[in-house]
Picture 1 (cartoon, rainbow, N blue to C red):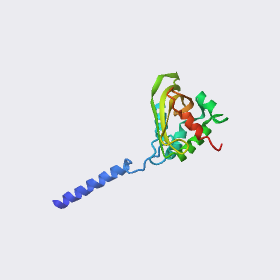
Picture 2: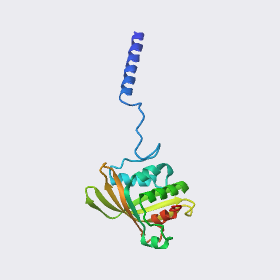
Picture 3: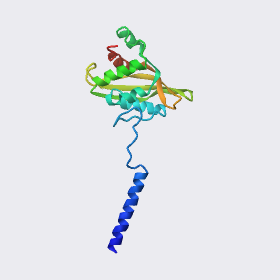
Picture 4: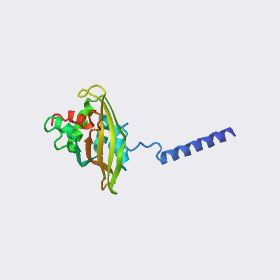
Length: 198
């Protein structure tokens, strides 16, 4: 009787193991698009996913690929007018996706700590069409890096245009930075500090 129970238990166990391996339980996971191991990088199926990827990966060296993946090839950054006037000539000239990627890399390489937050929307979003949306955010960014003072707070307003591509992925096409009246430096100011060497 006992031998029969042991055989039955072994058969049941073998059937369960075969079923688990057949359904993919022990298969390796597919890498998330844009990120490496341990990098939170949501597939950008909506503007919210894009925002999540910016928050999780800006000023973060392992997340750099994820951050740059949410920038449209035609991405443009527009600084606050006061930041532009106060900066050395050419700092914000022709700020494209390539410039943004290189600046983000410079900052991530230098930054030992960074937290980015889009606090809320300061006005209602504009839905231009089913594939284009503009959102208006209050933000703050804390950086601990050599080109900034330790734990410097940057804050302001960001008018961000999101567009859905033919691949059904959303990306940022346009970022307009503005001061918020608090007297704090903007995210754009921090970006300008890291446009060096090109």
